[in-house]
Figure 1 (spheres, rainbow, N blue to C red):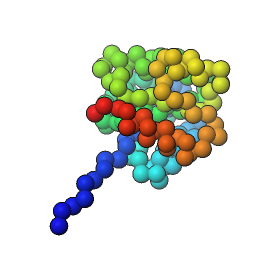
Figure 2: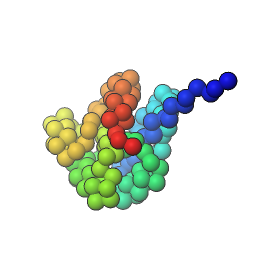
Figure 3: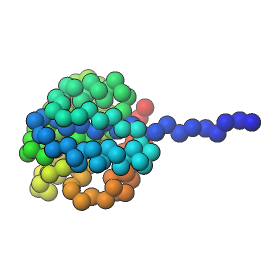
Figure 4: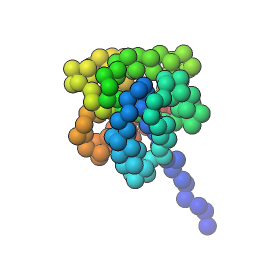
Length: 139
């Protein structure tokens, strides 16, 4: 009897860049994604852009999710997208969530962030968007 084809799990890196110590939201999202069948790599607190990019490449992730709460979201997004381009990994979509002002969403998207999830975004909406982004990524 032939084994059915297996579907590879979508792999998401969840990271906190900078000095922000608020990681509850990142942990909640990481757990919800795992429960939904994603493979999650959580890098923990106080990561640098270089650490996140390195981990994303080493882990061969489909998506990078950044959780920000200390107001540096635009700076972090610029540095992260720039670094991904420098190392030839600009095909990894970046999403952000956390305490991000609504007025900054368009700026983040113009930098290259694919989606911004604000507090209260339903998990089902996050999951659907991540699945869409992963399906568009060329492996």
